[in-house]
Amino acid sequence: MVQTISLVWLLPLLAAGAGRDPADYVRLQRLSERVVLVHWIGPDRLCHLVGIQSQRGLVLIDTEMSPRITTPIKERVERAFGRTDWAYLVNTHGHHAGGNGTFANLPVVAHENLAAEIQWRIDGQTDPQRRRRTIEDAAHVLATLRTNLRQFGGNRAHAQLMRGEIRFWELYIEDLEEGYEVVKPTLTFSDRYTLDLGDLTLELVFFGKGHSHSDTLVYIPQERLLFTGAVAYQRAQLPEIGEQAHMEDVQRHLAVLDEFLDPNVPIDRVIPSHSPPLRRSDLVPIRNYYEKMLTGVRAAQREGLSFEQAAERLAQRRAFRTFLEPPPGHWAYGMHHRNLRNLWRIVQDESTQTRLTKD
Image 1 (tube, rainbow, N blue to C red):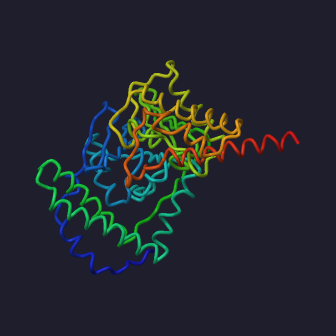
Image 2 (image 1 turned 180 degrees about the vertical axis):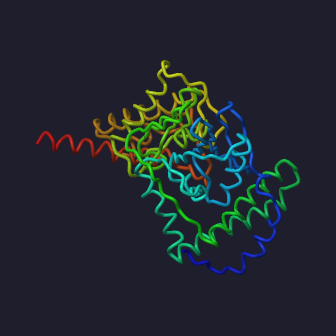
């Protein structure tokens, strides 16, 4: 049982949001009779969860940051389909598993790496100092949002988005204050897994370590729909090569993208977690980024270039103009350089292993 930390100074911040129905800030888009997209509104909060109805029950792909935020989303999906018989919860990566506790005793399906990946959520509640720091950081975000609403809330539509963001952080702080159960997956896989839902199948495919250690794509052939999670994050945003990635992960990225770019695989919609629906063709620049980076780094190391020389040759402004360069302060700022640094290490490790094998 997580003990509540008393932070009396938070009460004025939280009281301001009392009485608001969280459902007011949930939006749902119906893609078909069997699939809906649902998200919590905010100025920069587009985070798609996917609700699915099937012969064997309802399925939700991903959850929000905590149970209090996920609960009205769950209820909105139930109202949309007129039923409450949940069958499965699917996590595409660890960042979207914070609200798993909303679904008591429901099988949670995810890649086998996800359990370790969300340990930080458990540590954040069991370590008093870390927990206090997490609450204080969230409270700082909330205070900043309230100030921004007072200063920039003149536009009604923008003000509504701001209020949604504020309510989001209020509920998150309430969960942190009270403590909530962090539910790990109960059904895991290493490469791919198929959920048979009777009239539908969900094909879960591990992408390799990129945005997270458990990145998973979900393909629904009967709906001709591919949910990419955070693999295709937003249109024109760089994909990621993780710090813990190895050559097998980069090769898996290419193989999985090639699989779903095959015209013989029927796909009408590509749904990322954080972007309006994309087209299959939007996956092509992502696939080409991985290939061009890998080819370029291998060539640079064969030629004896330094990392700095390779970074200049493969600079984003020069070699990858398809992708936007985030401004300083954005969480993705400098991602291309980090990708290049990680891939440089990966290729060096590959060369070292090749030499050792020959010896």
